[in-house]
Amino acid sequence: MKLSTKGRYGARAMLELVLNYKKGPVLLRDIAQRQEISERYLERMMAALVSAGLVRSSRGRNGGFSLAMPPEEIRLSRVIQVVEGPIVPVVCVEDKKLCKRAERCITRDIWAKLEKAMLEVLDSITLADMNKMQKKKLTKAKTQMYYI
Image (cartoon, rainbow, N blue to C red; front, top):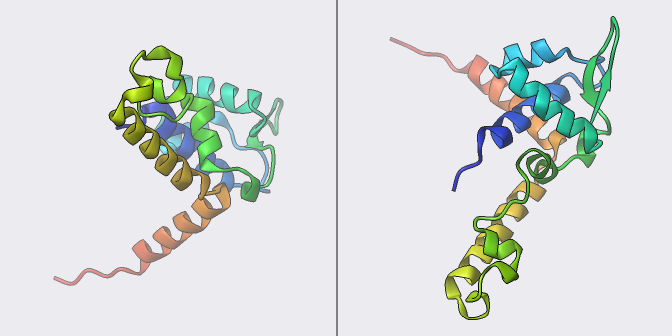
């Protein structure tokens, strides 16, 4: 089970916005450069995040992108669902009608448990949590010393 680049890049773009929260809008090219994402690809993802109400876009000299709500209110699960679509390991979990075996299929039950576990993890993480995790990781990286 893998997230596509949409999910991975969407999370990284939102991390960039939370790292700059309350500092003003961030230019698309700056997000793309710092997170090593194609500007054209990022532009389409940001449009989806704006449409979903998670990100605000502003034009002009001081324009760019910023979070549309506090980082504590944005869950990683929502970000992933906006850029990826539903978080389901197989389509029959989302819609029983797609499989005539759904009612008697034990593997569908297992995939449903997997979906629940994935959602629980992604729901448990807010952008504020990601911000703390990133700062902790950067602090740890700076304090590590290597001896030869």
